[in-house]
Length: 432
Image (cartoon, rainbow, N blue to C red; front, top):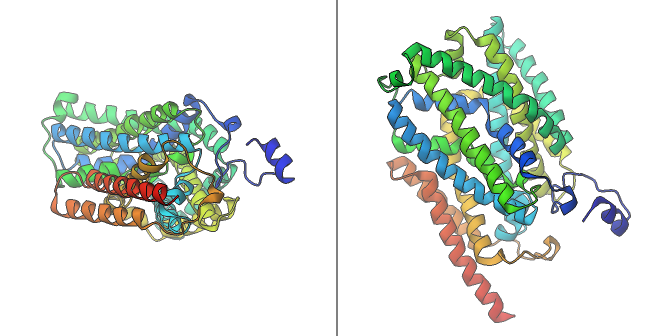
């Protein structure tokens, strides 16, 4: 339904042109280039460099490449499936979950996805504050704190502007972080005598192979599960899949790679300390700020639409403002110092959500979905049970180093939701 049609039917103006709780009309859909720009701007994300550095310092280069390949393929395939559903339904992930988890059960999904994005927001704001203090030699706590509050306000304003704001900031911010990433990688290769020299470097820290793959997937497990927030603007499902591959396989994979190469070459797994030791802290701050501005605008947008779903509101603005306030407090508390543990947690808790959505859609909704207003089920145990089982399997896999924890969780949740969905569909047809 177009804005004009909505006015004619209801006699009111649409409250939010980003359609946070309704399907995106065909008139507002975008092409593959536009969607790709937004998603690449989302995944070309500075904290992913930091995660890559922590992984790279723990492996020989050949082992790291295997970790990166497997992790990127798992993440890319998973996100592409979610992105496809977004394009087909025109709905955000959290609103889509009403069909699968029920109109009340979907609130759990919104809290999980919105909450994790608030955490990411805090990591990015805290990183800027920490690097600013290092760049200018500030020793007081209040100076970087003021920086965090100021940049957080700027990011919030971009998110409030919606899809258009994120698109234009992406065009500016993505080249900035890519310049920094290529620059650091070039210096790293010079340091070790080229790519061949990387294969001869011994790791300086330790991490299990399974934990490393989980970390790669965890870099965008939460955000990837919410890819539908942006791919719902795609004209076709194929466009969404291409955009997700560009963003989450190529964009995210390059960021992990660049961070790891730098850590291997200089023997430092802390990315901020690495920039400081290379004498690049001021330039790094400039490029990172440009990048984090866009990425955090995306994160704020994500928890804004999650909040709108929880409250069943057509306005995302109040929830963006509230989430930004919480994320800024987390940044002031130093949340960026716990990034690896945070990513591991995301790699366990979030992918099974997507598995449930995919499995249930295959089982019950491939031929189309009814209007949201017709949904009557409050909580669907057929979705909650597979999700809990998927999380349990992912957690055990991660703790014991069995296979790839996020993939194990996705598969168990997907198969369980599919099986229970087929059963529910048959029972509904029999009773009709």
